[in-house]
Amino acid sequence: MRLPSLRGILLGGDFLPFDMFDRAYGDAEARRARRMESIYHVGQARIWDGRDVLAQLVAKHGPPKLPPETSRALARVFAIIMWGELAAWKISAQLSDEIVPLEAKLAAASQVHDEARHFYVMHDYLELLGDKPAPMEFWSQRVLAMTLGTDDLLKKLLGMQLTVETIALVIFQRVRELEVEPVLTELLPYYERDEARHVGLGVQMVPQLMNQLRLPGLVDIALFQLDMLTTTLIALKSIEPDLLALGVDPRSMLGIAFRKQSEIDAAIQAEFPLWPTDPPVRRVFEGLCEALFPSEGGSARLGVATRIRHAIEVVARARPGVVEQWGSRGERRPAAHAA
Image 1: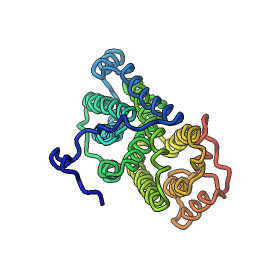
Image 2: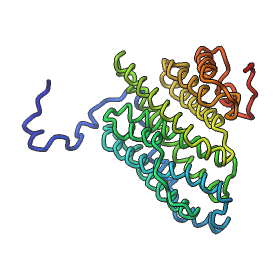
Image 3: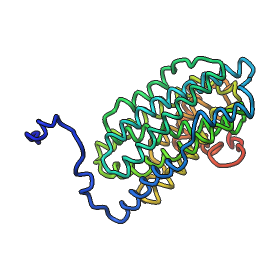
Image 4: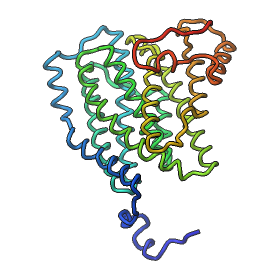
């Protein structure tokens, strides 16, 4: 056990990482560092004024006007988004403090600024919609609490960059594609561009940190990821009525999520060839997707035993799941199986 030095005691523990420039990078690490640094500089170049953009869109389309049921559903879904942006603001601030390498620290600092803008602009939009943002439902709160509460840098990056940010991208894309409300439709691409950059920090850092783990650490990370993904799925189920009121099929969102995850995996595998292509956690998650959101449709009356059997078949790759139906670009493909 390493005892604290007298200098450390007198300075009060953690101070400044004066050794942050001591590490020598290999060629591959230097390339990744430059990519992370570019996240900061691109973010600086593409900063947008949230007040100005929202005002211009309202002047173009008029204040949001929707039927009461649709307006309430949209407000409930995007209130969750708004609170998620506040959590992302807090989490990215934690990351920018905890991460030591300069390039990654810059990328995390850029995200702090983005998330602050996302939060206040979404708050202002919801005010225009005429609904006071309600608190998040329990399961969405738990997803964010898991990420906010962990002291493990790898878990925080997995939770924030590769889970919460991906979920946000999926919701933004699907609502934008459906053109639910014109102001929101033109506002969301600004969010999407920012969130796509945020994912890049996780793509660069998570595999490096994973490579440093031994088997017990890998098992712990896998269990954390499965817990987070399961909680996310339950949260999605809890807002299913609101999504359907907006014309959003939850399975289509899951398909987009898997598509984005495949793109993330491809980016990671370009740098880390040993990154798994079909990990057990992903299979279990696909099975849970089938159990909670069956391919027969939300109105199908399937017993628990049938749902479990279908989920097991999806895990075993004996039955097509949401990836086969919605996970590729283009229109939905019908299920190629019997009920």
